[in-house]
Image (cartoon, rainbow, N blue to C red; front, side, top):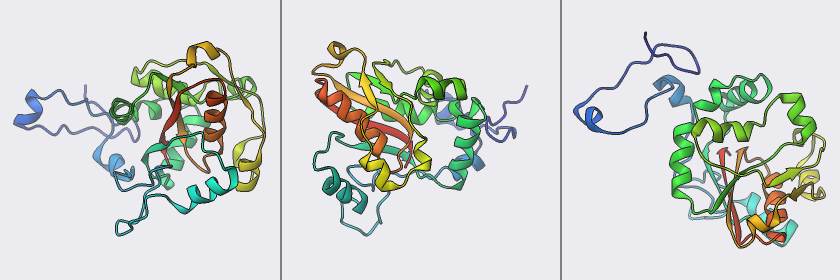
Amino acid sequence: MATKCILCRRELVADISWGSLFSKEEKRTICTTCESKLDEIGDNACEKCGRRMNETSEIVTCQDCKKWSLDKKINYLQKNVACYEYNAFAKELMALYKYRGDYAVGVAFSPVLRTNCMKLSRDIIIPVPISPERRVERGFNQTEGLLKFSGIPFETYLRRAHTEKQSKKTRRERIEQEQFFFVENNEAIKAKEILLLDDIYTTGATLHLAAEALINEGAKSVSSLTIFR
C-alpha cells in the first residue's frame, strides 16, 4: 500500500539514491510540497527569541526582545529556538491540530523536534501546560502530544491556572499579566537545566512566565524550543 503525506494525503514519492539506501535518515511523513510551505528559520535568527533576522543585518537581538528587556528588567528565559516561521500554512496546521484534534499534524513535526532537542543542552524537558479547564475543552495538551509523537521523554512538573486565552489579549496585557504557573515538584527541578517546549512563540509572555516560575523554585537555567515563531 502506498504511503501518503499525513498532511495533504497525497502519495509520497520516495527519493532513492545510493546514499539513502545505507543511511539511517528518518522516514518521510510529509510530501515535498507541504514541506516547502513550512518556512524553516535556520541559523540567522535572534539569539533570544529565535525570530528570523534580515540576512544582511548584524543585529543579533530583535527589537521585540529589546522591548521585553526594558519592560521586565529580568530575563528568566535564556533563549528560545524556533523551527519555522508562523506563516499562513502554519496557522492552518495549528488550527487543525489544536482546535480540531487532527493528531496527524503533530506527527509531522517529530523529525525536527528530535533534531533540535539533541542540539539543546538540558536535564529535563517540560511541555508548557494548559489549564485543567482548557484540557477538558480540547481533550489533550498539544505540547505534550508533540513530545509523545516524537518519542521524547518529558516531565510534567509545571502546572497552570486557568486564564483568559492569550489570543484575546494585547501585547501589553500579556507582558503585564500576573504569574499563572506553579511548580508541582520543586525538588525535582532544583539546579537543573530545563528545556520548555511550546508550539508557538508570539510575544514570549507565556514562556517567560513559565521560566520565572521554574527559576524561582531553584532551576539552574531555562531555555525553550518552539515549532513556530
